[in-house]
Amino acid sequence: MKSPEATPLPAPGGGHAANVVLLDKRPFALWYDALCRPPQPQVDTDNWLIDNIDRFPQSAVLRIWSNSPCLVVSRRDSTWPGFSAATHTLAEAGFAVATRRSGGTAVLHTPGVLNFTVCYRLPDRRAFSVAESYAVMNDPVIACLDRLGVPSHIGEVSGSYCAGHYDIVTDGKKLAGTAQRVKHDARGAIVLSHLSLNVSNSPGEADKIIEKFYRTCQRHMDIKEGLITSVNSFLPPESQFASARGLAVTLCHYLEGRLEHGNKAVTAAASR
Image (cartoon, rainbow, N blue to C red; front, side, top):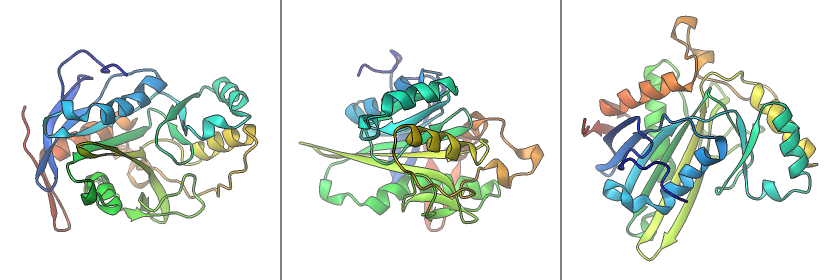
């Protein structure tokens, strides 16, 4: 895949760029990717990151982005016999279908969902830890949400769509889903972790779209209702976000400052 834009890195998509210290005092390039690409190229930009991570300073980047209405599915989902019919059915409902390299089940993207991608190189593949790699991504988001008055933690909500051990949970409901991919090469390992945070979507919207997709694919997906929530559900009306873009800007500003979460600090080294 070609570079998403021709402008110099670490901000190939324009928007906001700075450095944020996340892992072992290592600076990550902070990229607020504000461009509006079609759904598949937007998802493919994460693939481009893992293939081109060494183009970034310190071989580490944190991308904050959103997407047009679409359902993002794994390659395995795209092999089901009813996939073409499901793609047509969702298109009639206003949702494109995009595929991703990482595993898991379908995830709904809309302008009300904030996506958070962390990609970095580990020079020693033996240093890789699943729990730590998810914490690198989740901890800053959890700390920012706490400042907004939305306390949350890492966990799993059994019965929710695409449930995982390292999702972000609040009040017993799923607020964000996560996925991860690790690529090995001669220089070590490259970790890409991805998080989708429901900011302003109606909590039941994702369940309905995902259930429709799998039903058309003739696959049974046991999804319990009432287990998904949103950031706006915990905010007073005057503080709610119209879309994920508002929270993206808030999160960027927050990461550039000093963030304390437990005994961990996220300190900005902004190159404004």
